[in-house]
Length: 276
Ligand code: ADP
Ligand code: MG
Image 1: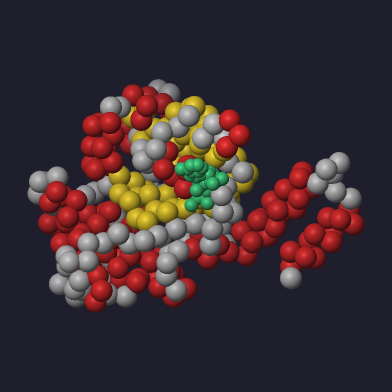
Image 2 (image 1 turned 120 degrees about the horizontal axis):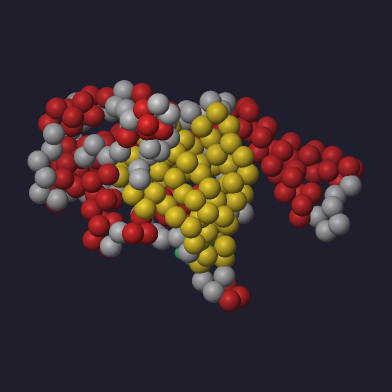
């Protein structure tokens, strides 16, 4: 039997985009935020999407997560082609299959931690799976914080509540956009450990946008965007390896953007300035 025939259905990637193009605006104000991106996100994998500000990280995440649509190309969640779904079906897919964590924690200030965690299911009038929610809360270390309101929690704890809310509905994939962007370094590290546990202990798939190599070093895989294109990727990335790689990408960009190409002296000077 061929491999394809023996593979279980779960071998379908968690998410992927094919030939993804996203253009904002038109005419003189046109911005090509994604320029023909192909990328696959495997199940049970923690991926960091890296790249400088404006490189298309959030756009890629939004188009994969059915928060925005592509101008060209296709985006899949599992084997579902998002372009075939109605608005109503997209809303249901987001609610039932995806979880979101943003830089701003987006918690409801008047609700307690546990009320925030189960709010999406309460709104959808769905009975939470108590056993699952309990294991999420235990994994996220929030057991003794459930009655607290957001203003009684630290930034790191608030983000753990937001992550628990994303996990509580058993979302297949957690999409996180700069989840440590609003946190001090220690709370940021803390949240990364819990993102890691969402994958290792709860079996979820995590796709996280970040421009922080320290945050990305918690991922299984880092992919690098530049000017809306995929520049490369790294498995089990360390912060040092990523910093070196980003320097190489910057040199490449410098050479390409210098009219007529850069001389060796200019490249060396550019590299010296980079180290300052
Ligand atoms: P990143 O998350 O890597 O900082 P974004 O995906 O937010 O980058 O943006 C990629 C490019 O698309 C940038 O040039 C940005 O200015 C542009 N862009 C993003 N969103 C919009 C929008 N809603 N309208 C117009 N341009 C946008
Ligand atoms: Mg962004």
